[in-house]
Length: 135
Image 1 (cartoon, helix red, strand yellow):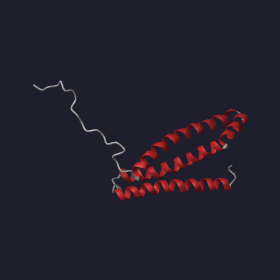
Image 2 (cartoon, one colour):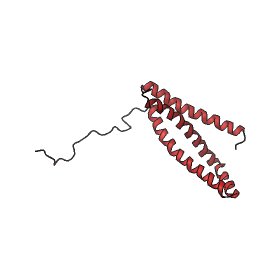
Image 3 (cartoon, one colour):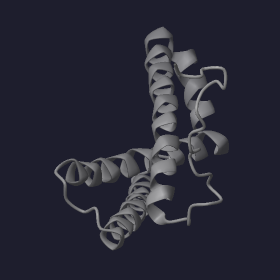
Image 4 (cartoon, one colour):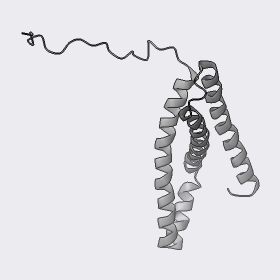
């Protein structure tokens, strides 16, 4: 007969962040999760814009004033980065789903490329928007 009075057997615990060496792939994973939450915020902002547009010209003007404020522009800048990073990260994940790009050096390189693409594309988008009088 077995002795069940000891409870559950001890199992190894998952390593803590202090055990792992920090690397760009880890940063990309965390950044991707944050960007996904940011994109949810962006969907709410877009829904608010449509609701204000459908309500009245005064409501729309008020909504544009909030979005056009410095904090509103900062949020939109973050949303722009989140969109571009999500595009680059999804392309990277597609290759991973096909079984390609798992070597640490290549994974680190593609992670850095995803972040760099998002930064550059965000800057270019905002420069073009500013040059065309979007704000």
